[in-house]
Length: 79
Image (cartoon, rainbow, N blue to C red):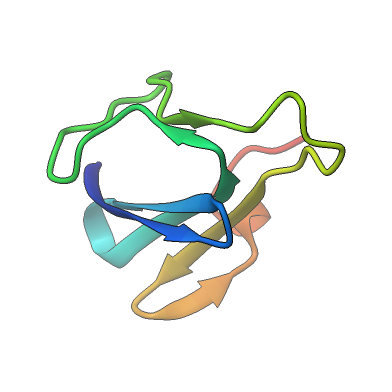
């Protein structure tokens, strides 16, 4: 996919990755971002991290298709 600029929001970042067929994956609550806007991202690439010293360590992950948020389980093999 193609990286879209990260947005700082309340001391964390949100990263958007544009995929083929109108999909966008969204990664929220990152404390650091390791990819530049416009860079190519491949499966397994580390795009960011969550603050290990924060008591609220969690990642918000979303999938959007054609501007509509969808359940990631419908497009990923999640067990």
